[in-house]
Image (cartoon, rainbow, N blue to C red; front, side, top):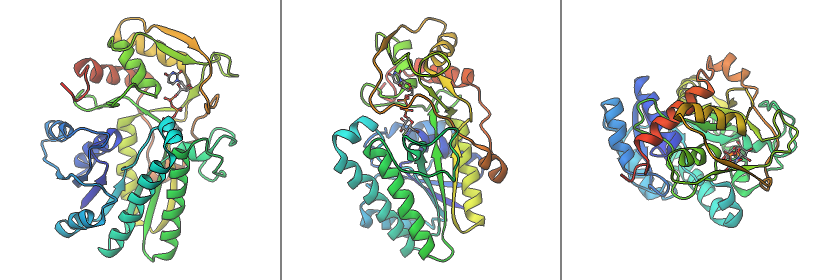
Length: 338
Ligand code: UFG
């Protein structure tokens, strides 16, 4: 079976490519490298011993995308391609709506033309918005997103759902990720943000490797176990395996199914800092800073649906996440730009 990964050179896409290859799938990657590196392809070959088909295209470009379907019999698509920075989405909302929604519309139209009826979509826990009680469950109301990035995810879920209702035999799995962290155990692929990271784990990694002086801990007066923000961190390899399970499910069903992919456990910022210090063998300097706009005190997944239906659950501990993140960062202090 041949699977197209849009945005397959990115952080989650690349780890998913490894797990799909291990499960016996043939992988084709479409990526414009707007937020990823072509070096990922070499690294993937080192890990898997396989050279994946690559199309350096913008997925919104239908002519370019048709060529992929023309030259390959694509059985299913995992749709990762999209802009993903929360603060950037607040600054340039139209660019987020244009890019994330256009890529999806082009993809669905081309899939329709070529009779490809299976999609797995890279959604986010952010669709539960700011009012949902935690743990989040798939049947909870969505909306009240705090930023345009989150709304693009929710709108795309809607677009895919409406399309699936109109198209007999179409199968869609919407995966709502919690906070993906860590790296492949080889240290050959990992998260490599272009600028100063927004997210906790890549920021801690850069402090650990000496590229940034200290971490700002955004708020220590939340009503949480130690006053700092609590999230559901999931090892990217577990997340990648969740995609393989979702793909298998999509092939055997039709209609739309939604799954949370999280570990189901809340970890605070300070717990993560301490676990990372242990992994890298030295303290991570930090300062307490004011709360960050739009942050919630706490949320984590009820991931039982994925466990019952997909037979999937997160296996890696927080110590594993920190060990693998440090392994990647210390072996690649400049990310892919060595
Ligand atoms: N944090 C810090 N210092 C930092 C960065 C983060 O203290 O430098 C704290 C935040 O305040 C929060 C926690 O670390 O309490 C996690 O923050 P992240 O930025 O790593 O992640 P978020 O939960 O804010 O956002 C992530 C993804 C979004 C997604 C959202 C909901 O980045 O794409 O989860 O699933 F929408």
